[in-house]
Image 1: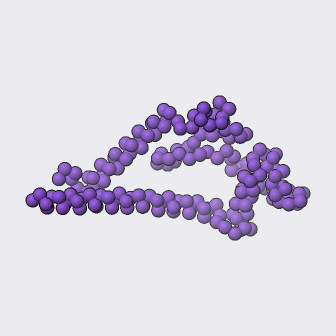
Image 2: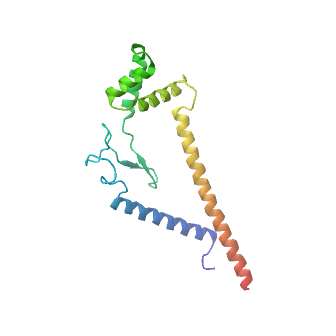
Image 3: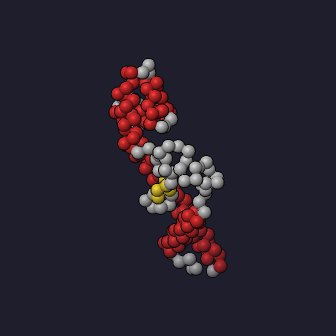
Length: 171
């Protein structure tokens, strides 16, 4: 048999997949998809937003990249705390959100989302907390990976079944 055992076949497939990942990672480093002439930048690599440094961080396995959030967790917490502390001074919570968003340089909708998530984390508002959302993301990622593994195994099984039928037909 020219492919050996199913384990050999799968190891070869994994090695080929890793080689392809390395190739595309290198290709993307040499010619990034988001070059300054393709997106609105000021030439220094910052998107037209104060406090945003852009760029990306590699994920643990290096297969995908993750966007760096433009605002630090400390800035988010402080902004949410300011909204909650000063909403009595404004006609509504949204008026406080708009006022504070203008001061820190983010959009009102962004700050509103941070406030709503903080309310969910504190149990004031219904919905998944930040920890629950992270857990859901992790489980969805795991399901996606398991489905991909099942697809590989299904194809390998079909391949070896065909090879076995071919071998019997030739004998």
